[in-house]
Length: 218
Image (cartoon, rainbow, N blue to C red; front, side, top):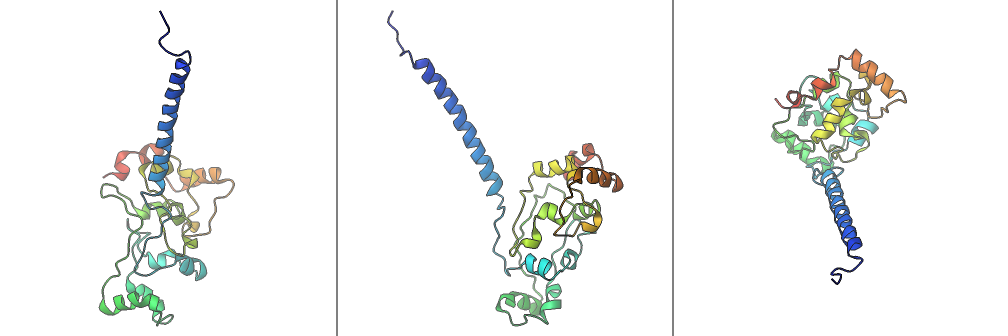
């Protein structure tokens, strides 16, 4: 009986199967990167009523995070500064700046500035700023190089897997408490050894507890 298929048919079929598999993998990788980079608006400054610069206030002027975020050590919410906090300085400096007109109007009318929130978790996720501060997790660990941001943007995805990675390996990210609010802190070469000591000293719970569903979903 005559041969129905060309002698190269098997090779073509194998190449086609491999090509389809590689194409699917490539599509998945691209979709993963797009999802991680764009859908959560990472590194994309959002338009705010006032173009507030952390770089100017924190790095240039040396204002401590807690001056504006007053409840970060005692509450689940870091706190958004009321307008009178802004005016404690800007009633004396840059008093006629057009850029600060919304701040002056907010103060005069006792109306809150409608800031656009960058880092927001769904209602079914529980997050507490104060416990992370108390256990030696610095602001820049989650918020990125905040001291270098002229306009604030979201540094991390805040995806569950991102949080779980830290909860599984807290010694990689923990720092001495005196440096929690430092925007220039860099992990030392012996971070692994130091981190494990701090985990014990600060009584950080074991990974089995930190990664339990109840820790973040209550």
